[in-house]
Length: 209
Image (cartoon, rainbow, N blue to C red):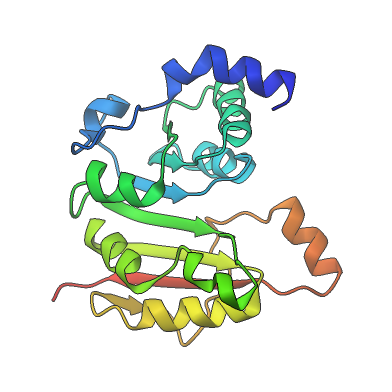
């Protein structure tokens, strides 16, 4: 952690983070208001998360990340930009979704650039697997969306296959989606595009069954 990240982590965690607890979270109480809530899983250093929250003050955002440098970085951004609509949970995402988020409580879920675990023997470690996608879908309200993005083509194909197989989700387009306006371009992505690297977006909606 940098000195600034460490300082933000030590001074701001109690103010802007929600401690993990294996009980359903009262989202309205956590934010002091009732508003559409978007979950972001694995926000990295938090620049995109902060930008999205700042651009959409009408929504509440919950960012989940395990790595302390990224948590410290986003805490600093929340404080600097006075983002009242963004909270952090530093814990394993699967446990957060399973135990802290009630069925149907979310308007949207973002999973941007998850670790691709490129070696075949490590594919089982990938986050996007059928049981987890089913769990994510159960936390979406009907009409809510699941948006995933990756710059690893082989993983993109697997993600599309896995999400397409979930019966409670329907694709918003044929195959991969154009980048929605709610996902800003990252510096990493801009650099990759200049080098000819692709990015694949997958955007599904929750349907009633």
